[in-house]
Image (cartoon, rainbow, N blue to C red; front, top):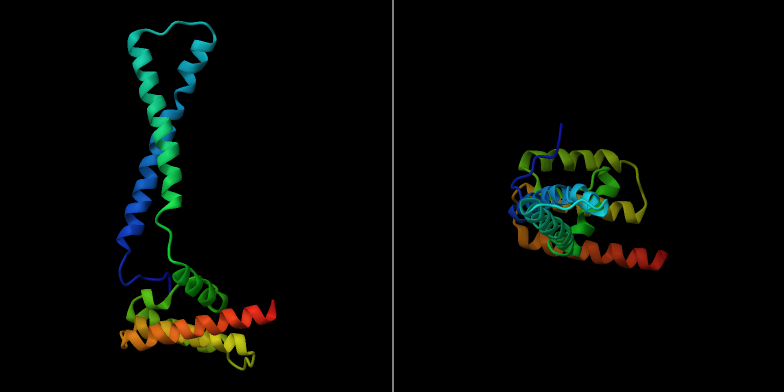
Length: 166
């Protein structure tokens, strides 16, 4: 498997990536205000066009910094999605949610999961295996509602187990 083919690309994630890219470009062009800033500090007077360019660059710099920072405050994944990916990653070695892959990839992940825990008796590992297999079944288009409920139950048990150990 060369990569994990996603069944569908999350539009919000794509929009956020492009938005961050735009703010990064604004930040870079805005940072160029340092050149005329050095000139002013050295006592040189700027003409009207240069002053306008400085104001535009300052606006770009501020917009890039503030806008880019705000994209990290908003658009985060849910704690449940993050925990699913982290738990599955403990077993698979890649933090992915098998439910968000294609049906074919979900089958491959389920097979890899069985190979990864062969002979393993630890309760926690078996619970994570159950989580991966449950999520892989969702990816294979089984009825999602009972599998999502099973996912929540497994996550609760894993959290409780982690609380008992800590």
